[in-house]
Amino acid sequence: MTITTILAYLLIIGYFVMERLLRKGQQALNLKPGEADAGSSQMLWICGVVSILLVIAAPILNTYQIGYWDNTIASWLGLALMLGGLTIRYWAAKTLGEFYTRTLQVIKGQRIINQAPYNIIRHPGYLGTLLMEVGGGFAVTNWVVLLVLLAVGIMSRAYRIRTEEKMLKAHFGEEYKVYLDYTWKLIPFLY
Image (tube, rainbow, N blue to C red):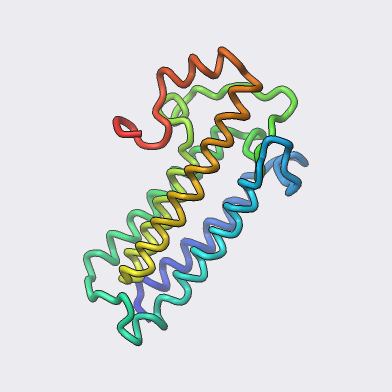
């Protein structure tokens, strides 16, 4: 097992510690999805478990040369992506404050947050997690793991974003539609 793989594991642990510490209030800790969730929370949990298991299994795959590529630069780039993703996720969660929840729901008193990073992209937390997943694939230097993480990450986030935006449009109406006009969904200048 390489040092970058061990560091990737530590960043994953850091992600879970951060997630727990940043969730404030009963609503934020609630695991029961709201009506508008449409199974998206369950999908994210399943995809998250698959992603973590893949990163954990990568050293075994690498031992048998299944998807392994020996590239020190790629592994360190992966750690940088993971750290960047964790930082973006932290920033997004800290900015949302009490509105940072596990499941899709609108909390009493919730409003549209339009301060950084939400004044640029609407879903920075999902971008952060996606960067962590892709970074994990690079960090363990396994292209099979990387491709599966990328596919699972994009598929699950695309569904979650569609579901979340439908919920927010229904709740906030025209105010959210205006917000859509001046922000990017996930990646500035692209999407």
